[in-house]
Amino acid sequence: MWHKHLDDPTLYELLLKIDVDLWTKARESGCPRCGGPLHTAHYPRRPRGGPAKLPAGYDRRLSLCCGRDGCRRRTTPASVRFLGRRFYLAAMLVLVCAMQLGPSRVRVAKLHELFGVSRWTVCRWRTWWLEAFGETTFWQVNRARLRSQPDGHTLPASLLACFVEDALRERLVALLRFLSPLTVPGS
Ligand SMILES: [Zn+2]
Image 1 (cartoon, helix red, strand yellow):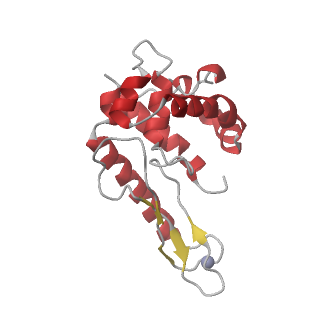
Image 2 (tube, rainbow, N blue to C red):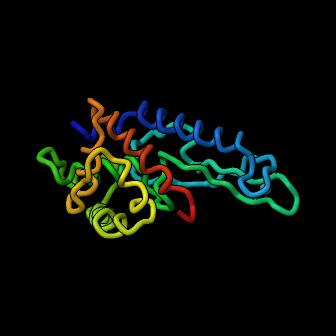
């Protein structure tokens, strides 16, 4: 069952590792404004909707701050874990909405039992996919990178189907990587 992926701690460990890599690359590049050294400056996060036991580190959105006086600009790299300021995990936001369109959908009552996600929350997420997502600059710019163009009425299932990896989990991770620039504040 697809929802087992969302309950699998190794998925969250993998996503955290990807986030650490994205953060490390950003730190090595230095401040985009002045080239100064970047220091650790994570944001606290309280992720909702996920397995009962998330790996350590999920209470932080990895971020950086310029160490040079007069600049001190914050740099927050892309993330495959947190989609924008939404406190639900990106993997949940993608997979739950994608699978609610398919034959193997899980009743919302079951999602609530497993991950604490309410019917109202799932409705809100679907509205975001169907209305707000298509309007983002990210989507306008990056949709051309996909092999095929997804049907806007069946997002995010149609978007997930654009990735050709064999296993659902690999497709999910590829999609989260694709979406990660969307998670940078101000994008
Ligand atoms: Zn700087």
